[in-house]
Image (cartoon, rainbow, N blue to C red; front, side, top):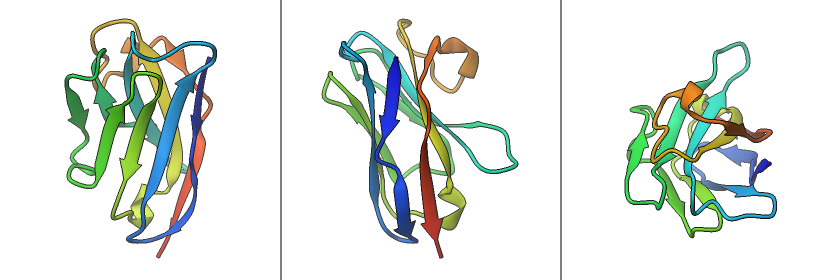
Length: 120
């Protein structure tokens, strides 16, 4: 079971780091993606990292501001220069495939989300 954590309330321009971990195991053998869902909107891709952490992908809206990385045990999403439009519930998802990239259906495991609120 996946668990996302680290959300909270932040002013625009600030930073937050989200963490994704799996109960009782490491995420070393999984590709992991971060997705978000704002109120009244569909869930959207944010960032992904391949199994082993060798490659990453980002949505255009977060490129240059967000960084996905792993220490093998967990996967993190470092969010800098936050904007009010980043406000959403953030979910992490995992797959045993090499990568899930931006494709939601590629991910087999989903955690409950963590809420990020960015005030202007």
